[in-house]
Image (cartoon, rainbow, N blue to C red; front, side, top):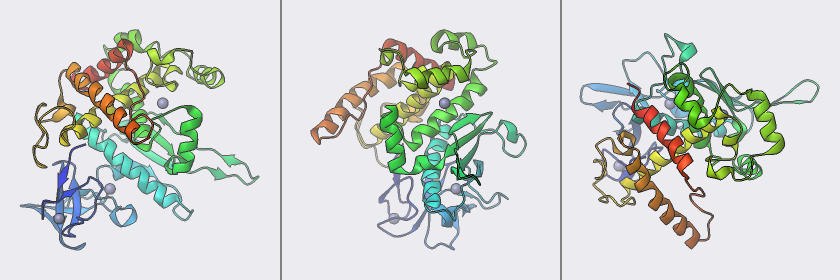
Length: 352
Ligand SMILES: [Zn+2]
Ligand SMILES: [Zn+2]
Ligand SMILES: [Zn+2]
């Protein structure tokens, strides 16, 4: 992710900030411009010359800092409006969990905007738009737990809000052996299924997809059951980015898709902080050197991304070890994984 400056005082501010710590102006983010705006008080209007903006209706609820054009009838920002269901806010913890999920989701939408992938049309074609529901497990009348399964179905992404509870997620992260089990990781994975439907299924790329990721017509339910019963085969890490990716062709695609998002967003961040070997710190309002204006998100060639990424991960792992933490990037990218990532790169960039 890029860096931002407060438009009032030029102090560095962050993507999630609702207020500048230096000049105390209110901050709002306009995704169409990828820029921060400021207002001196909560009731002041957000301006950019002729265009006036209003705050997302979720700003007082969960500190969403995104803005929308004042003339729009919509009360919610581009990201929040795609959430159709939120958990019961009277239950303890749910509001914090919802806020954490939306914060991660805004980062997801940031990447989707940068890749120009599109999120469908909620008004005219809601059944093909990207939609989210955040739900909590409930107790039935006879005292049983009705579990909410995180997953994707025809554009509707369901997330169990317990994933936003750090101790719960950490427990699963360890139990499942998933070093990158994070909220943003869940979002990036689940939208991988959505874009598979959109970009691979019924497309001329389906055969090439099957050659790389395997045949998705294999029974999904049986494949998952087998994975949970037996685990991933020995040596899985030579061919897959995670053990879960071995469960089924679709899961391999979604895991690799998420991994590609991690790499590109990580490289963008590294570039803005001068950590990727390119010209450091070109200033908070300009794209750092080495990439085109669109940065790593707009890179047409795949190989330069990996040429920048691999040494960065080696350095970051060494950094983590020097302060006693586990590896920042506990992966080795084989030629097979490289080819999978490249397929996704080409899919995103050659949509024609
Ligand atoms: Zn400021
Ligand atoms: Zn919002
Ligand atoms: Zn999945």
